[in-house]
Image (cartoon, rainbow, N blue to C red; front, side):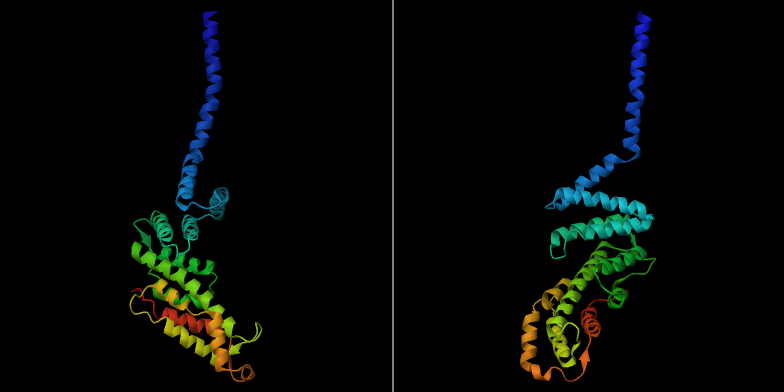
Length: 268
């Protein structure tokens, strides 16, 4: 009986062991603990108003990364997601997210810091996700992107990210300025009005005291579309608006972009 009881105990113990081992192996192989720990760290760092929605988006993003494939693509995608968590005006949170993004790319397949190729790809994607057209973003990217073989230090990485983020907001601002002086959404604005606005914008961008990208946006933000429209109306009465050459929205955007880009240092 003793032998049977001992055998029974052994059999009962063995019947539970495989499932327990199987659960542990599953958790280990799936890296569940690492995924949960990473999600909680992201939650504590971002402190969103909707924690449940944040976690849902976090895991959905991880799932999308897995489907996309490609280690470098996943690194860039993850980097962009971190950079989208805080607007550049929230400087502390933005800088923290930039640091996380830099470390993600530095720990990626390239190894030994962020390589120029990944850095340039990330900047292009950042401009694209911000809604910038290729023709608008390319002149800026030429000035700030690095050679594929170069190693990009953190400060240069941060300045490049900040420049793209500010440039995106700046272009939106210029689009609002154009809309303010256009007589109708389906008609191009008068060239004289556009040139006057661009001249005012150029003056606002003159900030020799601190050549920082965010400073340019702060300066241009002082130009209210309503005030510009009012000033232009005083210079050109409505009766005179329908005559003379015009400037379309893209030409105005290109001209406004050139004013900004001329003040960005070229990376050599």
